[in-house]
Length: 117
Image: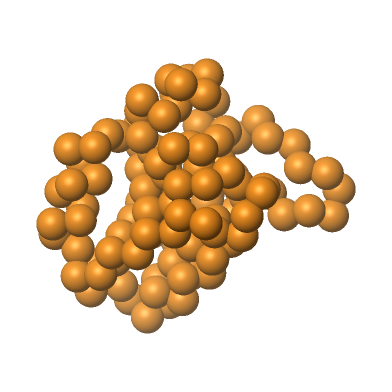
């Protein structure tokens, strides 16, 4: 099964990205194909230079771990530009993308999950 998870909110204000990571991990363990699409403020989560306070989770590293397990992470390029995130700042293996690619993901996925707070 092909699953796409769209996340739209900031990485440390709400738990939407944590939920997306947990769903993706469970789906990957069952052999499903997973893509996470970072849209709006969730594009901030792609910044590999984030430094969360000690004891807090590092969401960009959690996303990198998903990539290492076979998930895809797509990031809205316009959202990146708006937030000052350049391609040299994003986690390795993630991909700047756009709304046409999101539309294709929605069309071709068996399940589409949108987390919007």
